Each structure stands twice: as structure tokens, then as C-alpha cells.
Length: 378
Image (tube, rainbow, N blue to C red; front, top):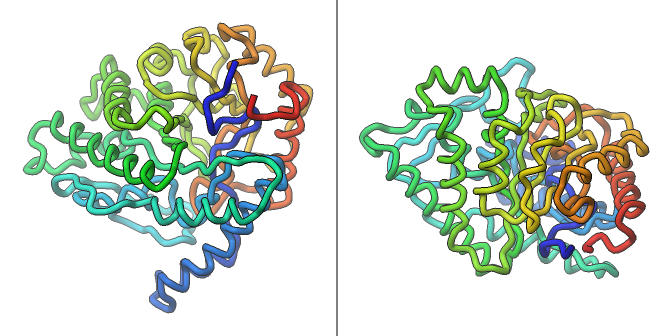
């Protein structure tokens, strides 16, 4: 089976541990002791470095490590007009802080591209390495569902959107504009990071959503329709992946539950090319939901853990890959391997050292080559 362009048998979700120098530079900007231009120079230096480290570790889907972000979602979403972030947003935050809140204060708009400059720098950084193997420049952005789920109706200005249908239409449209800008710049692979479809598998999260008057019978399909609309204008050679996450803050998780409540919508109705699914422990449930996977789709199984400092058990990972393959229509051909999430979904990062992070990545590549062969693009 041919993998979609930009997907590899050893893949990853996108974020890596932030260098301390970047965190300190961001703090200086927050305290008005330094400029954004000076911060970008620091970020540029370390992004070029993390590109090299990814290539040397054997990865071929290359990101900027999300080094320019404090949060995987807010730093992107705040650039749409009509969206405000309220609350503490500094880079270094104490334990127990209240996370910032996203609110929709007016009509949504896309005034200018958000990720294009970052994409161009990343593309240049990859090209400058003269690596022997081809690599894909991957852009990770939050799923559009991130604008709705946590606050629901109460977080969306009633005057701007007395009815939510126009809100979802506008939200899809601003994503269409951003994806078009990325495509015109040369981007061919975008990953949407989505916690909410996974949260809708958690009993407590479902209860909280019901208390916000969400219809749990229709919300997964509403989100699928939103995502489908957001990506509907992309050309055929732009591939879209979606990563489902149950939370990844300082090695902590926020939700649990197997994919069964959303599996049919996820696999049969969502028009993405590849799924990045968290499967690193029992919280993610069994592999039975993969029976809904169409023969034309790929799942990158997040069997390995970015939350733990210890290396995963190689033989256990291989065994679980084969177990998952028994459920998929085309077996191992439809599977790839990754960690369950990035190593640093927020600036703080998970509880492990950088050397441990790269050891985990190298082990992942080693396992993938043992299963599928040296060419990770096949």
C-alpha cells in the first residue's frame, strides 16, 4: 500500500522539548526587556538545530518543533480576528495555574497568513541540510474544533453569532484561507491537532459537555462536518492528517476512554488522509475501533510514550503493532508508528531530558525499519 505523501512508517506528532534559551527569550519579551525580532532570531537558530536533530535521528517528516509557541493551539488561533485569549499566557508558569481562556468576541476573520513565514523558514532549514534522503515539511495547526468545545455557546459573542451555524461556516472559511495561503507557499502536508474528538470518548468530559447543553449524539458529526468544510478547498496534492490527543501537559493527561463513541464518524465521515491516534496505554482502549478504518486510509499508531523518561519496550511495541494489524482491513500496510503525542505540547514540555527524547525517537525509527524495511516512505 502506498503511503500518502508526507507520511512515514516512523512518524511523529510535531513538538519537541524547548531549549531553555528560547524560554528565557520569550520571558524577556513578556517583560518588555527584549523585542520580538530578537526572539525570532533565537527561535530561528534553534529551529535550524532541531531540524538537523530530526534528520539525524531518522525522521523524514520534519517540523519546527513548535518552538515558536507557548501552547499548541492558542498561539495560532489568536491571530484570527474575532478571537481573544484571556488569562495567563507567559512562557514559564507555576504548577496549578489556570490556563488561558479562548473567547470569540466578534465576527471571525483571516486578515493575513499565520503560518506561511514559519513554513518558509522551516522549508529553507530542511533544504540547507543537504540530507541524503528526501524529507517533508510538516505544518501543525490546531483543529478548528478547538475554538468551540471548551467554552461552547457561552464563549461565543451572542451579538456576533446569535445562531451558531454562521459561526461554524465562518470558522471553516478562515481555515480554508489559511490552508490556501500555505498551499500557495508550497506546503503539502498539514496536521490538525484535535483534543475534542478524543475528549468526547471520556465519560466525565461527556458529562461536562452535556451540562453545557451540547448534544452528544450529534456533536461528533458536527465536528466532522466542521473539519471537512475547513479542508474542503485543498488541492488533491495537499495531504491532511489529524491527531487525536487526550491531553499532554508536563507528562499529565486529562481524559481517558476508547475511541468507540466517535469511531464511525472518525473513520467513515472525516475526509482526512491519515490519523495520528494516541494508543500508549490502557486509557486509549483496545484496537477494536480500527475495524471501521477504510482500506484507503492510514493510521499512525501512537504506541510509544512521550510522557515517560524511560525507553519503551521494543518487543511490546512490535507485539502491539501486530495486534492492531489484525483488526485493520489491510493489516500492517495501513499502519505507521509514532509516540502518542509530541514531547512539548506546551512550552514547559514533558518530564524527560532532551537526550532521552532523541533516544526514544531513534528507537521508534529502529522498530519501524524492522517492521517495514529501510524505506520509511513505503
